Amino acid sequence: MADLTTNFIGIKSPNPFWLASAPPTDKEYNVRRAFEAGWGGVVWKTLGSEGPPVVNVNGPRYGAIYGADRRLLGLNNIELITDRPLEVNLREIKSVKRDYKDRALIISLMVPCDEDSWKDILHRIEDTEADGIELNFGCPHGMAERGMGSAVGQVPEYIEMVTRWCKQYSRMPVIVKLTPNITDIRRPAEAAHRGGADAVSLINTINSITSVDLDLFAPEPTIDGKGTHGGYCGPAVKPIALNMVAEIARSPVTRGMPISGIGGVTTWRDAAEFMALGAGNVQVCTAAMTYGFKVVQEMISGLSDYMDRKGFTSTDALVGRAVPNVTDWQYLNLNYVTKAVINQDDCIKCGRCYAACEDTSHQAIAMSEDRIFTVKDEECVACNLCLDVCPVEGCITMRELGKGEVDPRTDRPVGDYANWTTHPNNPSSQAAE
Image (cartoon, rainbow, N blue to C red; front, side):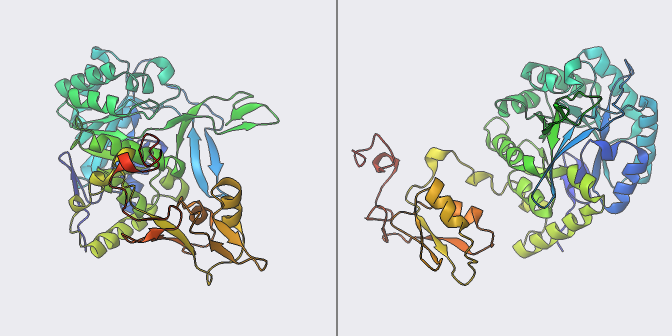
């Protein structure tokens, strides 16, 4: 079987699946249960300094977005960092690490943005024997209003400054957790790199309001008639997270910088996609909160089976493998042509493909009187909307036209356009004129 052991910035774990800093990693009881279930590592829920106490709400803390089958697609979270005493957390961290030396245990930190505060907390965590620290520069609610969390993560100069302090005053590897609530994720990643960070982790939660109670006229979750913005996570954020991970992995400044991928990881396939785009490991939260800690066992077996099929003997063979194939739009091959094909044996004649194409796309699907749906190649632009809306997996596929084969839509052989400058889609090309 494939070896899932990972060595992430010198931190070894038996598999690449870590629990993210969140409610599931709030205390010793939870973390021990997580390790017994098989998680390779844990990022302990964010610790703060012993300043003004952190007080969480005693009402609902989560809002939810569901799919049609009530499958949980996203959570909106208004919970703050740990409200447990610092000394209690440190004592429990030391106890857990003593009994699980083969597992990764990272401490998430968030304190006011001044050197003394960071120096003090770094000094206090030194004897826990934790494997590293994660700087929480991403939390978008509650703490940001106090000048911490995403309030720091949105200012590259602050990221660089605090990272330097942590590298100066701590022996531990430093992971910088980035906020997605920013225009260009490469800028904070570059700042972390300049500050000497050993790695970055992303994404933290997305600032959001998931729903509004239309009787109370207040955002949900609702606390005594009022609501607030929170942090959005879960399967729905995965596309955003994948893009941001890829941007960092292929940026000339941060290329090769270790990345811990976060954002909607629910299955082994999700994890493999993050790793293929450059993540050395992944962190999970919502999936554990939805299905329990043992969900990791399916992730481990699934990833192991996939790697065996591919002939990958270690996770290093997977990490970054897709990065060279991520490019900018202008470099896509415009001589590549496909056409939709409907398998009549699989078609259930629901008409979704026809309705979508006829009303909102290119009128490239014909419907006969007895509801037989066929593709009009001369109109099909291969947008694959029909495939996406079809409820039968595999019923609609995309056939690649071979080089020299005539495209019925353009009446030109495939590959006839040498490059973008002569392609008719280019409004400045001679062909277009």
